[in-house]
Image 1: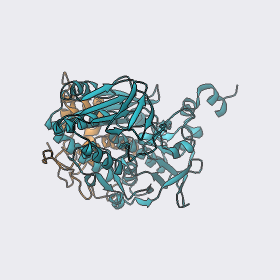
Image 2 (image 1 turned 120 degrees about the vertical axis):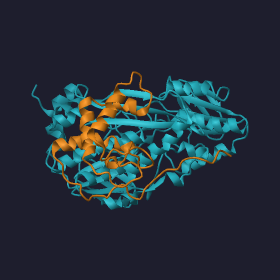
Image 3 (image 1 turned 60 degrees about the vertical axis):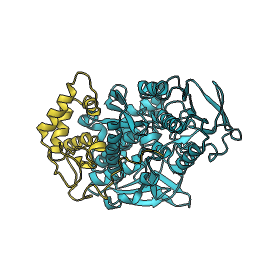
Image 4 (image 1 turned 45 degrees about the vertical axis):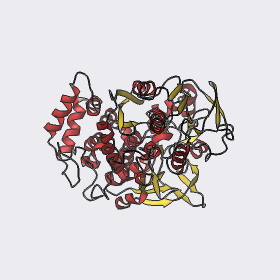
Length: 113
Length: 421
């Protein structure tokens, strides 16, 4: 009846190596971890995305910060990330970026640009 | 008057008083949690189970109770109606959480005892945790005359109901009328009803015509207002009839008609989105004050303001954040972080840095036609004055297009994976 072409849901068997390597972080690190985890709905658990979405794990802190700060400065936000970037303070953006820069890229099918 | 818990409650109202006295009744005085029971394996429950295991390094035991072996996602389920998705593609086994060490118990929770942080299953089994996390989604209020959910489906909890509605729409005669009701806000998925109206209108339009009557219990469209107004009057002009302020009064099953404050409407298919509230088992447990519909919680931990050690996340709680899967995942992480801190002997409520950085967000895509979508996004930040989450950013797509439609699957793939696997 309708155009049969469409994208599929990508669903890997297991996105991360479960509990290996996870451990109790200090309170400040836990806050960074909590802040950053709010990116994972779209960018993957621990920043390791699937289905072509940009991964954040292992990216340079400077690059993530610059990109988000640039998005914040758009006069009139037009895409989702330009809006999302406005939801965080510059200090929060730096913390999120620093957190992801410390994580290994892992193995997933996400993009990295 | 001495400052006692009772007097404060009298003076200031229960929620405000309890929020002002974190150490008195809230979870800080409970022992560090070693074992947590999660009720419900949807986006909220699965996410909190997974992240407690991850962030505690496996030190906090998590048991997840759900009546089914799998969850059927409401996200993308309107695309089952036009055949773009199958229910199978939206069905996710709870066993995917197994590698994290989450213990899955299949069972229907028939009673919650919040004082002992325990739940009773239909077989009589009782499960008790140091913390109880309720992630049970929505319940429906009663609608006079609505006796047959097969003849008049809601399809607002995905699964068999979705298939029933799909088949009814397929069977609707050319030129036939599809009638749907939208409950008073807050309800699950603010843009969802209007998205559904668009997709059904698209089906009918391609098939040669028909009518979609949207009976909204609210005065205006509740999300992506400009987008949906443009779709209703533009590409679906002559098909969609939008009726605001149509409070649902009763249903006539036999004649497939709904009686509203704006009149009686009869359809070849009637899709009833009934009034929403927290599930009955949550109401029965006393977690919702009389006369209210949702469970009050502290958004720093999602702990009930009425019972220490009981947390409510996702659609059942009363913070006023949008009831969506993406938000449910977001809230689950705040709750998981709080519980892991308690397990390590820290009080999350005493950590000013954490409090200043509790954020949640939502992003969602709304298909408007069979191959074009719009989107909506929002960010919330904890506000110390109101002691609630405050909207700090809200945005929506300028237009619906095929690029958004394709992005929708990238978003859903990541949201599903972050929540369930």
